[in-house]
View (cartoon, helix red, strand yellow):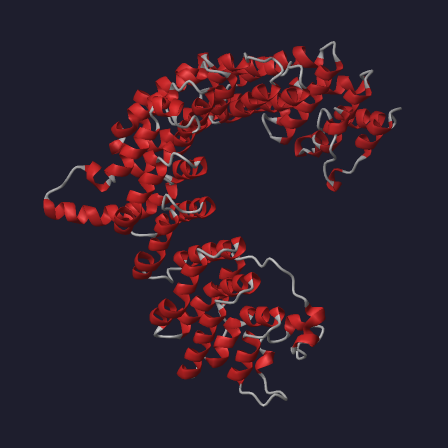
Length: 603
């Protein structure tokens, strides 16, 4: 019988040592041979010359003086259980052997055994009706004991196994409450070892997403609140701040809310803030106190700012009033790293709060971030499109006048800021009318096209193409033609060769993106592009050759019989194929069907 789900579980737990196949013969595993990957790992149970029963041979190798023998048995426990699962007495004997093996003094054996626990649990769950009792009696104690193992690798493996068991729903609520949680609480006692405490705090934060609300509130919440103010270990406070409210917890909260809603119907309704653990909320709010940040922990405000969207998601927009003042306090924190953290997530908070609360409470803070240090402004800029699309059209339009302010930075050498602006404008185009795009975004795009940094210029050329496509898609042909004339004057007739090269690039992009009817392209852009085929700079002619051969001549319009431009196109390409420059000749002759070649090194 095959168990694919068990194999999937084992993929999440990594082995940390390699098989020592070369030495198998020396340790009583001669059935393996040199190709042991395809052999049953339980071959040692087969009859041999020792006259032992299979259970006797299991006992022999499970407690052999040779470590490798014990490792092999631990690794093959799932197959061993399959061999003996039909007989209840044999099954109990194997499980008792597993329990004894878990006390092995060699860490690698203990870690290997723990690797197999999730697989064994899944097998028992699928094949034995008394799974809960057997699992709780034999395996859960091993997992719990290994959480306090002196060996770091064994502890890590046990932690990973516990999370897998929880995710698969294989460990009962009773076992969590009576066996696992007490250990986590012991490990987080003030007197506990620092390393153990840090690990336990992290585990506590991870398991809460898979426990019931009642279990969390009654068993773990009081200790968690104490840990949030641990005065000695920064790592503990940091972990608590980061995990205080994870967005993933919303699924658990939602399930509890559904149950509470049923109760509310019976009780005639209740205040929403009651579904909220007040003790935890108060602890979070106190952690953002500026006075505390200055005297106890300068980093705590940053971590609270990082977790704030998760807090808001968990509380829901109806309880935003609980967080509003705290958010405003963090948004004006003297540490720019705190404000930067909020700037990077303000668009996520806007999704949670909805358009009305966003307009009333977030827009003023967003506006403040726009005027902040570049380190803060970049957070707003990276998600500018995500935030603006959430605003009403009239409120969104107010930012058209402020977009150009992103052109000014504290450090002119911060070219990535301008690059990010161009990328965002490409997205933002869809949010505004073609009139607004022409009146406001067009000028910013043309300015960026003249940037001193080539990376900024080339992303800006793509922005120009997107603007032109917007104009023609909206039927604004006259505005489109005006823009084309402006591009021709600015780039095709540019005294600097990089401008003329840009014109060839823009023309190719227009053709490839079908930004305008090819008839109009042939009339208004093609003549200027053809004129650059005799440009004195080879790098300009390279892009002209590439645009003509790979894009323009591949369009059906220019292949039609009687096309007014076909003869001139053919003559121009033939001339480029005989160009004195080798790269120009190459691109003019390249078969388009062989794919586009990268011309970046020539730019």
